[in-house]
Length: 195
Image (cartoon, rainbow, N blue to C red; front, side):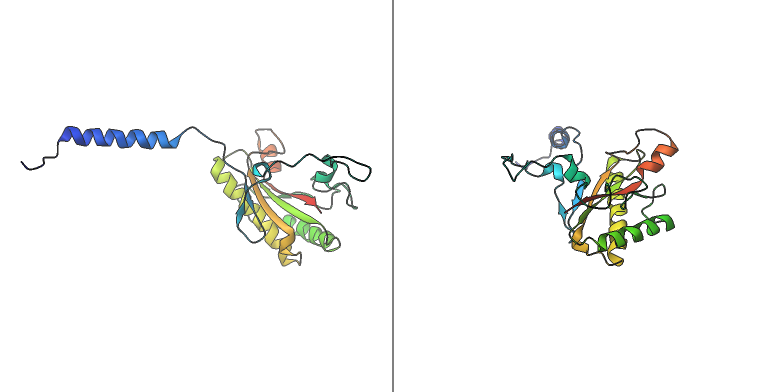
């Protein structure tokens, strides 16, 4: 007796395949923050790395608080704060663009001069976007913005191995507002300085 393909059997297989595909999709997960090392390979973001071991404080050892992240131990002002008097102020971008403006290039030229005088300093260039667009799109755009700033700094003589790129997309807005003024503040490259 030859094998006959039954339509009911086909329908059953199609239904099973759809159910398996839906089950594989799972729930909505928050996307990881993209981080790249100077060589260009993707690395886990700070939050995904193993937690730091507690420090036993003693006469010559103390736990570093928030002052280390802000770079307050480095001469030249509070770094990476985005304030106008900071040597590493944020660089702004136009809507839906990773192209450096003339103002951004001028700011990065000042940053390069400051960094060339402090060769022990490393910088994480953070790419940020406004709230419009999808999470994935903004993560990619944030990385393009951070890379544009990093490449320009490297072209000005800052060693590329001192510059790390990370994208936060729209996940860390500087201004939580929902208007053009807030969005303009959030489209930026931010510079986190460390030793």
